[in-house]
Structures are given as C-alpha cells and as structure tokens.
Length: 251
Image (cartoon, rainbow, N blue to C red; front, top):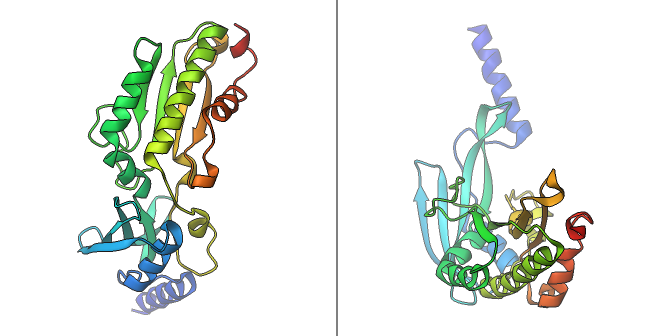
C-alpha cells in the first residue's frame, strides 16, 4: 500500500513538472483560431469543428483567402520516452495545409509533370502526401509535400536539360500551389502552445541515378511560402545547378 502511494505521488509530481494532464485536454477554439490566423493570415474562415474522441483529436476545417480548404488538428498525446508512453497527456497543434492544397491541385500537377517529362529521362518517383497513389509509403494525414523525381542522364548536356525541365516544372508547381503561410509563427512561439511543423520537407527534388558512377547526386528546392519569396525560372535553374557536384557536370 505504501509503495502504491509513493507511485501515485510520483506520477502527480511528474504531471505537474511536465505540464501534462491526467486526462486528454485540447487547446480551446479561441487558441486554434489565433494560431491559425498567425500562420495563414487573418482572412481564414472556420467552416467546421469535429471531435474525434477515439483518436484524441479535434479537427478544424478552414478556408483560406483563396477559397481552399485545409485542416488544423488539436491533439492530446502521451509523452514518449524510449518508445514507451508515459503517464499523462500533453496538447499540441498540427495542420495539413500543404498536403490539402496540393491534393486539391493534384490533377493539375499531374498535367504539368506529363507535359514536361514526356520524352525525357525524368521519372516521377515519389509523392509523400498522395495517399491514393501506389508510389507513396507514408500515408500520414498531416504529411507535407515532398516530391521526388529521378533522372537517367549520363552526359553534361542531359543533366543541364533535365535541370531546365525541373526549373520549368518547379516554377509552374510553385505558382499553382501558391502557398501563403508564416512557419516561423509555429516554430518560434513566445507562448507555451506546442505546434508540430514540417516546413523543410515541403519541396521538389531531382535525383541523378548514375552520378559519379558511384553515388547519387541530387538537387532540390523548397516551395515558396509568400509572393515575395517566389523567384524566376532562371533564378531557380541557377540555384539547382549550383547544388550539383562538379563531377556530375563534367561528364
């Protein structure tokens, strides 16, 4: 009995120190609204709110200023140590903005890829967030947009041609998605609100399979998150070329 009391007191102290709660709790609707406006702009509109008790989350569906729907999630999760769940719950916020916008424009993206890769050695290899495709193996509702292409180029001329194609596809896709968000408002918060965020995984990548005869070489860019960040096709081409190993360009 004494041992049980000690264990219970230890758990209470642990919960108090860690900021966890004994039962699932979620951020308030006001907090979700504030964070969503900070991240995606004040012109977002809340459409629906749905509680998923089984998965311990509340799903908020919003519409951005361009009329596109996306979701924000308020979770209650156990802390985890070395693969084991610890007592108590902590709250966090995450979202599926990048994925939702991409999937909304998926058919248009497919048309861009078909137009630019036809009769080339470039192959669409992987889309992280496309849960309906056979080429994905990470079916996560909040997964950001990571798109990977492969190239079978074996000469400098082919490499440069494929980089040009990548720049053209990249610019069209970036303009199509037209992302607008401030990820720093999630990553570097001044309050104690916990936000999960994956801005550095929202990108397009081109992998050269036979680079250097020994190892793969790759080039990539992150999708822009504001009008001010968007570059020209020539700027993107230069940025992609500069990432390649000299041996890849010296074939």
